[in-house]
Length: 180
Image (cartoon, rainbow, N blue to C red; front, side, top):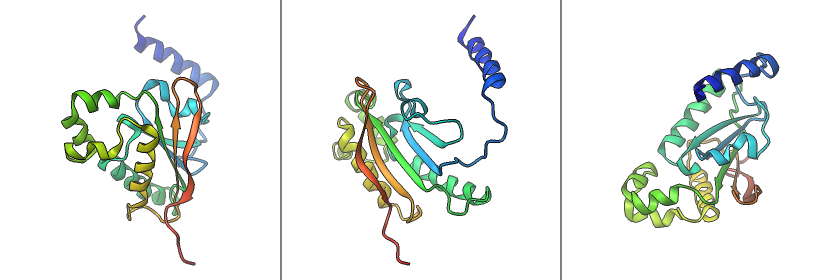
């Protein structure tokens, strides 16, 4: 049996035991988690998310880039169309130790620079090899994006692949101060 067949069997088990047709399109907690594509760091598992609680976006390194910002903008519109005019209320950036992005940094810096929307000589400023510094840099980039709602609460965390623990690097805080 190949793995595609295994996945179809698992889906049949899911339908019989866990499927919930009543789930809403928007996450019940108003949370979006941005994480890495690394299979060791599935946000649903490492953060104990239940189905429907959070939208999860994954890319290489869990980094902020043009595609992520465009996705967040689209989700804001989808939120309004789905009856949640305030959109997501909580954005968690989840990066991790021992990330494969480091290999890309060492062996294909031009490709990585393209992915991160910077020139190659700017990669060092993005702390690609240090997830603790990188997540703080990315939270700052999110804070500087004026297309996101001022009330959005943003945080940055790092998952340690050797211990399974998540460390809060940037505590949750509203994107910007709002008046009124």
